[in-house]
Length: 503
Image (tube, rainbow, N blue to C red; front, side, top):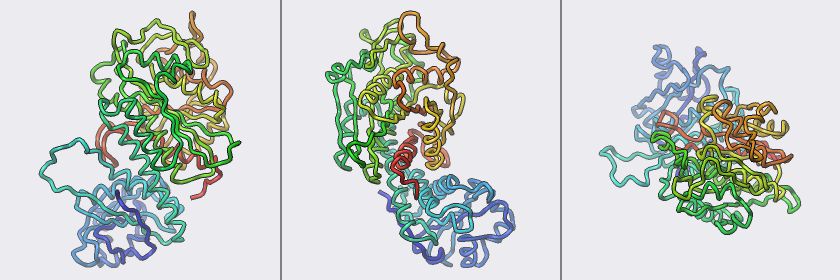
């Protein structure tokens, strides 16, 4: 585990072996920690800026050796882009870039000085974001590598956030950032596990073990209980698999017993073959991560247990595989969900909305309100929004606004999508209450329309995270694989409901 510290001492006094400072692209003179460090290094940073080798462009990383002039042996100069566009999100990304570059250069103890009083961002918010960025950027999933390459294994043991703000506020912010990042990385571990390891049963056991560690109430329900609850949609998806389903319920009780609980619901398809509507080979390659919605819920519940806000939250994750076999559900079948509604099946690869239908029905029946779900639900949302924002669908404008605010604060961005009545015809069935899929046009909207049939008037929001939950390849900001998207957003939403929007 990487340690995270705070120091309000001058940047020149940092005692670790590496430093990172930021430079803006549109300023003639160095400012803040970069200016102070430049003085200690006899003007070398200013010379690099004057020569054009350091431009301050966003994401630019320049490594220097200090040659014994100060205790840290390496300095990363990070381009912060234009001052007018500087934000907490930029701090988070810059911390990730800096730590990855310094780790690859052999650093072990890194000081991050990426924001200062005159830089235009709240210092506590920047401290939290820098901590998140560092720990998210340094994440690796290598537990199944039995042979390593010949390169020396390099790792950062500690990061220190350097700032001149109020030390108690900075320490609290760094602690919160550490909990959020570690919880997101916990979710990433779940998403990156191979499907022969992370079966629905194993996902339930991982949730149970985590709950015991941090003090959450936990119920892991099996197939008999699911059948008793008349969850015919979830059972239908599970029919083709030899692995039994699980219905995971985690409870955090931070408010009074009479206070309604916010429900977080996550799709937990631990492997999605497409069922009888079989995916292509390429389409199946990342389908071990079709449970990233469930992972986000489980990770957020971990964070809430450690942060202890005054709010009641329930995390719900229906877990199953979607496999082809002689017992698999078929196009043409009609399934009955837990709220009694019937669903005409026309594509067995649209299974996530079926699992969620029963989970949402359960949340409504239990009286949880409001409800927000996250699911790697449709490829259509990636076509619409790419990898930078999740699609946000809702039946309640006030709750949608709350989710948007949580997304803005957490840095996990969303984009509101339409839910007009005009789209209802896409899921109209001649022989059942609704059709499972509305086809290719407006695919993410019709999927959300299906989900809306199982929440009634309860304030509800749906996040289609198919474009944001998975990073297809390693890049400058992080490793390929599961991103942990949703953990920070869900946690921030719960914190806002607790009335703790401050840093």
